[in-house]
Image: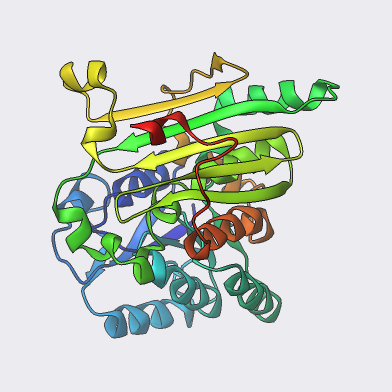
Length: 314
């Protein structure tokens, strides 16, 4: 049984980490969040120590690491706001634990280089949640693409609309310096998926960028990709919106829809199983996706010519 600490216990994604820790037969020893709305802990680990101040949490983790405590922390799971991931991974490694970090790993690719140095210094490891890499439909598509010998690239359309209320832009998620913007906050795992399936990135063009949506064109070794991301409910196609849907997700490859809407609920547990077996995705696995979103964040907006996503015609 491994001992876990969790940073960001009040966040949206934290319950999935708690469920994964429990499902893999391990225990949550300590948790941190400046917000004390963390009653969800009772459903999983009511005996876990909880802190709202980092300094007290730090002291507690340090105390457990000394002597013969049977609660010495083996892993720190990081579910904090995006801009804090780098700092919290550094804390985990220096505390003598491995890190398990939510997406996006960091906001800029050069942060990866600093973390690689700390891994070497401490002998500890950063693991990341790249959950789409363990989704059965995505794994099957990757194997299909790799097995095919084709002289032409696949044509891919990626559309992801996940509606958010007015609160979103008032929170840290609406601050590009803290979240990285739309492409980073809601798109980075899709960009990692595209790299995972279709190979190295060869081109990156941005056609639209605002607080609520972004779109562009990416070219990989084996694919040409038109992408569109949005948190605006008005971008949900009318038929789905009239049916009460506030989300829309579609990936087509050469005109064929890839069905992967199911199977998401246990991907964090599957990711934890891989990490605990020593097969977790590490720092370098993230570099292409982080480089992609960092470039999108600072890119000049290209005119709507050539390949661009059809939703931009609205």
